[in-house]
Image 1: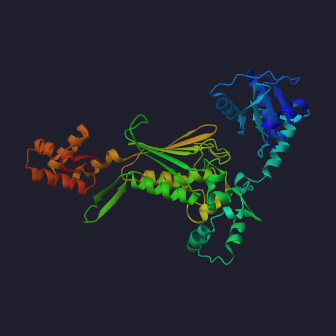
Image 2: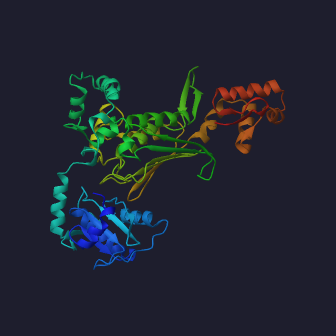
Image 3: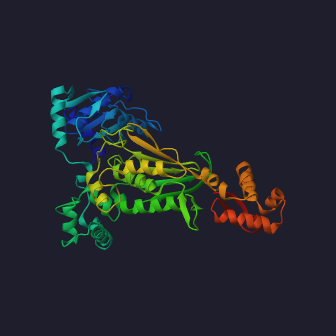
Length: 459
């Protein structure tokens, strides 16, 4: 039913178990009580700009009214709910229509109080009822286990399942899959009868963004240490979750530095990455695995700066997990997705990912700053820090005096040309070029530009 086209019937029918009128947006707290009540009962519709007696007085709607109201509801509902406010016209007046679905996760609180809809009123839910609802909640399926609305078996990428995922699963598990691809996905809890579940579409869908538009990774790479610097690149990684993880990780590796140094007493070289490779992949996979896909108001965002990488995720840390206990606590918001990613070694099956991230940081030769976690009600940000500024320091004991002079000049001035190098060192052009080439081979500097515009910077 088109609710917007059904406004006359709604107003004529008056307030009832699934319809509430509010005269203006000044009654935000009362609106939130309705959101809580409808979420905890059978859903309903709130019409703002209509009096209790059914008179359509209308409201003034500004440019950001809808966005501000949606944000207010999301921030003040616990757990968050995601209604879609819209404006409708009735008798030449503007009304605001808010549709609220029954929330699968109950009870929904507002200011530490939960409400239910009884007739045309919102009533406070008692502590006894809340405990009963909490018990029932434990029996319910998670979001990734629910059927994907509108999806059919034709939306599954069967070529990917057959030619890529199943062979990968067989190679890692050392088990031969004898069932059909359909039966395999049913056993993996991604398809129920003939209907793909949410996990099935995200993991194996031809076009997951058709159903979940913001289920992708957005990555921006900046010059300098802030968003005010030049944006060097912007990438969007769409597709199924495996593709998003693989392509995003590959990009991060290709656009972070790698230093080589001679091993003590040998002629072999050790490669030392700017960021621990396990940490990069695990953090990207964690973001994809644990984000709140029910909230399609945002996406995973990664920001790369010269001195750090920030990973921003929707949904905050899972229930019971905090920045302090993240190493020890275990909880999966999307257990089906987590299980399948772990079966093909995309994520640590035993919940040891954070232990290994911290261990990798402690064992890194350049001793990077430990990761930082900032949590909000509906978001989490993880920051890892670059070791690039320490690259040169590890080589100083292997450099000659001229090479050290070049490094010192670069640290102070940022760039150097061959002509400047000749002046700084007081040597010939050939000698200057030889020293620059030696530093290039150690990967502590990089060459930029071409021809006469060539110059060098620290890696």
